[in-house]
Length: 278
Image (tube, rainbow, N blue to C red; front, side):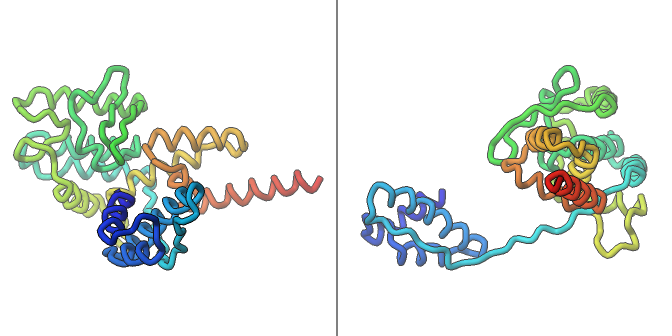
């Protein structure tokens, strides 16, 4: 999309080749430092590719700098996840299966690392036999299959038995009071209500977020990984695929999430150095 937009901009100027001045002017129109950086980066890649065939194309250097800092995740302890699900079961029953729906959904995200939007978008036909979820049109339009742990499959099937007794025309697994897909804003406000009911991290400055259920799943999965190099490589690839990451670098980020993981990394590095010194 960026390259097409740049091409339209350059064509309007009468350019027939990539020009640094045009690229900078187009990138400068970006709405934020991040957008400006990405725009010029993409044109530089494009210009470098064309320059290999025609030296008349110019390759701009990126004049914009943007450092994206991710907020450190809140990693839930196992007992906190149990408290969260128990608290969801004590929500006001303002409509049928409100309690059961949120308890099941929070548990499902914690057990699979699904994105919140992926859980909200689940339809009845996406729950496949043998405990497999079909995630359709996820990030960047990709789809994947997510096998469930038997305990997660049992909990979901128990909820679906009650869900299918409702006379609803909407086929989303989890429904709002209006019998439709739950809005993201409603999901977020309900989650904050549940964390208050559960008394989770009430005294901490960094409050837990709904997305931290996904982060907790990834972190705990990595904590269980063997420290053998080959096993780590396989584990990372599997986890990247399971969570639907578009880049394995997004999975590597979780290595810094807990002191336990950092300790494991340090120990593995020391062992590697010791072997090389022999």
